[in-house]
Length: 168
Image (cartoon, rainbow, N blue to C red):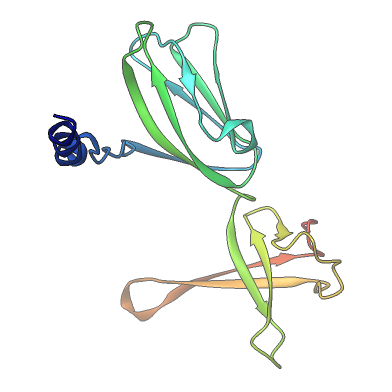
């Protein structure tokens, strides 16, 4: 009898080990550190769960519990789950937080494949590698952008930046 029970237990083992289903996000929220976005829901919501904690993003309901503020705290990616008052999920998203706003610009020294990276926006350029001491920083930088127009011409705009973190 014990052997039969053991055999039955061994054969039924794989039925207990089912593969879980991944909870894929329905939306993506892209922020930079320090940036906030506000979302309004059609219904009031209850609990908010951010598994990554406040190191990556902070989510806070506003006064009416229909408006949610999400603030990027530090670089990384984490899901967010928003539930209604009875515990039913009403929204799921992935929050991606970048280090700074803007796009990455690389400056090459011309002698090697090494580059110095900056996050540049319309207003400033900030160092991408904040742990470096700044010995390789250029004293000034200019960018020229050419946008094609119809008929073979182009519009050209030049932006000049002073030392990193300071705009002229």
